[in-house]
Length: 203
Image (cartoon, rainbow, N blue to C red; front, side, top):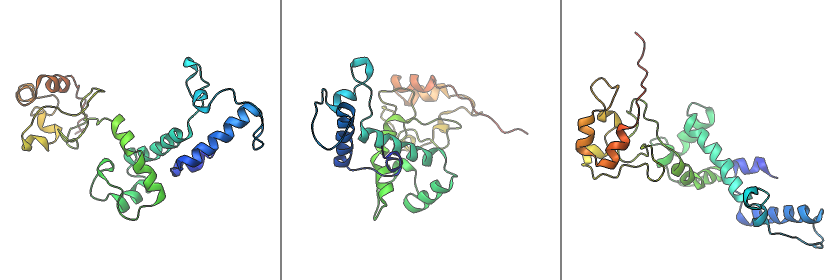
């Protein structure tokens, strides 16, 4: 399997299907190319989990996107690494990874990472920390799988404010009255259920 190539490039769907056809032939017949023999089950059937009667084989296109997603995740979680700094200076010097667009004249590797950006965005959540780098409305930070975004109708001044503005003066807990005043019941309950564990610098 072209695992290394799938880690850095998004393979065309036709190429993935060709690889899967070769793997299916080899699995059932033991050889590739002469077309003889019986394929007792389709590749889609073999790719189903073992719990539902398949063999748990990987679909190559999905595996390709998963491997690319790991590379893109490293850009987000390891911003000080050399490759992350190079990509940031080239493609998104003034914004975060999730806000960037493909841009003009992108490399093939960057196109692949942009292909998996939506998958990462759907499954990722912001960790609050001190709340200064997380915006109240645009960022996914509520602890719920269905919709981690704020649903309450907010004034524009609150919309773009950092989450830290919802904390008390000491910065070690939520301002309960303020939160319940500006958010609906659903959002307020979710916010107040987030425990804040902020490490203060030592004296």
